[in-house]
Length: 314
Length: 298
Image (cartoon, rainbow over all chains, first blue to last red; front, side, top):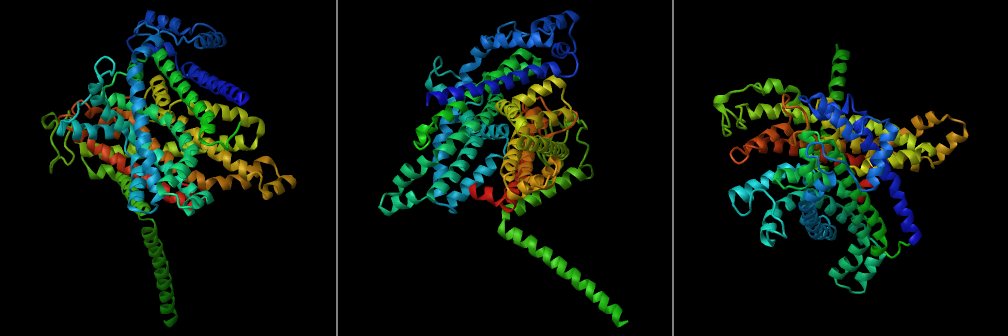
């Protein structure tokens, strides 16, 4: 078991290496002088020189890479070109809203999607099943930001139930303002995720319901609720949890858009502002951070399979 | 004389059977998969709109300051934007960008993914390297990757397509590779190897045909998701440059005036959602008919 965990942790290293190499090469292999591209159209020669120095573009490429990796391993993501602050500081300032939005979204998704998917599988072919399937196809077709604007228009502008935009911290502004501001972004971001998870839950619960042990459980007179909860959902957990992990990539993309629609000062806004100013160290740092989170979450999910299914042993 | 009339009879009856058979298949499609029928119909309409757009509507970039931010009416079906441009014309022209991007991304991603996947699945020593690269690529959030690539290379139709293609490739590679790994154990491939067939011929003749059905299904999903990504990039201001109206950048320009004129965002949004929905339902239908093995699971 310990050996397996170690092996899995080691296996993530080459993947992270590929991500780092890709991010590194993206800037160096882009056409033209990257320092000039980043400096923009109105830059002076000094600006370009300063940026070239900042990014370490004067060294041979192998030296650049080793230096850069050495800093990365120590948690140094470089220095922002426009604010002259370390990228890690900028990230730390913007971390809270993004983490909160992601957490509320994951919780809301699980609370809604898994019961919906289970219900659809249980009443296969019924109106509920059709509604869930329709929702999961539609959820994949509506862009996050259009949904966001529709919600703002109906709930905030027409009904005036919730604030239009912005973010309030749970810790400094209080719990109620926090929830009033986070509800719409959470619902917006959850829709595509709910579509994905409900669909997967339906498929895997449907498969489990065909199993002999489900028939046995029913034959011995167990209530349908217990059959669904104890036998069906538990055994369907592994594929569902796997999809939640893979869906993290989708979620991260959605966070960028949702923060932009609702004017939430999180990491998504940080990366967008960085793109508009071509502040490459920030873009680079955030891509690395998000990829790292994705890899770690999927590693944890892989390792958690034994919790859900004791038949899986390492 | 009589022979001639016989001939005529023969051809008309043949035509009649042909058309009736066609009707039957369309009708059965409508009956068995109504969603696929309507999705396909909607898609055909969208393609026609994109192709014949210029004949249907006014100039999408003509500026009429006097008609700024007009509500939808008989003159301006979808209203006008902050420069007095006709939103209806812009939405019609936007269909072109969306469909071109969707189609181009699907084709390029499938071709690149197919070649890489075939090599990875069949050539053992390449497999480990290619799959690590694909794992790494999959870990990078697609939208961020696309935004970064575009911000470095400048936004044109071409760079937008490439930036959306790159994050889509790993999924195709994984799909093709999994097909190759199953097929290469089949007796007819072993027979071909035993008979001394060269590797590239085995790949093309025996393995490639097996990948086509799942790839067509995958291509439709990629097409749908590429159209969504394109609109998101446009919306974030990192997509197709504003001179070319695309659904994404129309909505991006409408953001500032949203409280006053929400239709600037709603109409292109509805057009986009309907088109992607159409593509996805056609994809589901293709999956059910071409690939019953997966269809059973989903």
